[in-house]
Length: 263
Image (cartoon, rainbow, N blue to C red; front, top):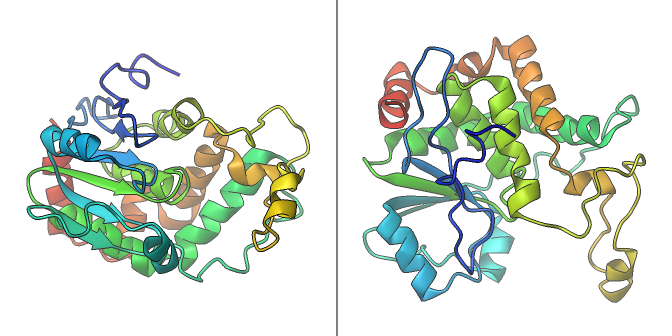
């Protein structure tokens, strides 16, 4: 972690929402800095209190992009969905596009196996990611909040693209991704376990047989995972800039993102 990553302005400590973080304050390779109160990421909002919702509105949130599935939204509605003066958008990033995901046999570590999911997601979800990035580009001059369930995987991919467009270095993007380990503690996460296929919390599966147990690597948030995913974009799309153009962002949308996000 760096002083930028752990900037005291980064984490927004509310009682009822976890992993709430601002993407401002990061230096870019061309000498600029990402602006605060422009893009904010977090975990799910289903326990959001009225007081914390007002704190988020006071922070300047004007648009909310929900990356969860329709089923999750029906089970756990978004508190911002019907709120006046908030632009609420739903984009189901995963859908059924990665339902058959299996990590490669050659991937032997937690970081490698988690990166396999992101690499597959970047390819199979090009269309919906294009819509998400377009929504963020076209949002007004206010802070835009995006989130999924844990604020780690789908949220992490979108955060990486936003920071990448702004030319934030890969190492910094990866460090930001890894902050989930600090701000979303999970008893099932164990980065020291050498067996990425270990199944934690098997007693939970016994209590709830409809919930398929997940291997250990699915709970991980190692910076190395995001570095591998970014290297994949470099090798196959010419980097983040090449990727967002491939998925349909126009020059005008990219310019709007940059003018909104950079000092």
